[in-house]
Image (cartoon, rainbow, N blue to C red):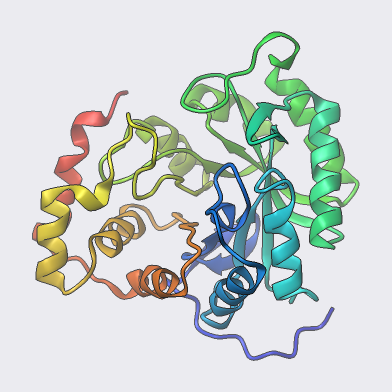
Length: 306
């Protein structure tokens, strides 16, 4: 469709995602699902308001998945934003399915195709800008067993077929090693999603491969997570001190450091709060001084392994 709505400024500036410029501050929809990964008690009204706020503030990169609330997040995206403007990049993730209150691996090629089709149906979209393959080789989270241990090449072949059919625009990877990204390069990888934050830089080698090949870097758990082995950046005293000095929140400092760490970084911090959304978007205006950058670089350096 032709979008006649005025385009607001891109929060955080822009970077390339699969050949299209998108705002560097996007939105992750996991918390708008129900059950696993979602926030209990989030109503359709609240979720729709958050999504419309994001769009009005220039967010044009929405990261979602059919297994976020068994389609709940996707249905809310559709209710809030359809008909979709051409500039909006709808990005999804495959490799898992919802079962009851939790997730199970869904790594087989036929399951990847079914998940893409399910995303298209619940979103009411004809094409996904990018589909990220979430591998399940190592913890935390899902670890594939038995018939779910699938060769990466077989998965990529299915996603390439979906791309050739026009169902998806680009192929991304999630929860992968540097060697896996390198092996997948011939498939035309446009982005990589791995856990990465100011405190957890264990994926630095993966980021190095992305830098060398012009691949967008989309860190998840940018502020830490509920997993006990992953520290929360907002609770680190150095982050809190820098936040006080810059007149910002600790979360904004942690997000601003990610934006400063590499120009291809795209953030998909999620929330079910309109106030927190506004704070996340405002992180794109935080300018860290040199002492702050040096301190923030150093506090996570011990987690780097090469």
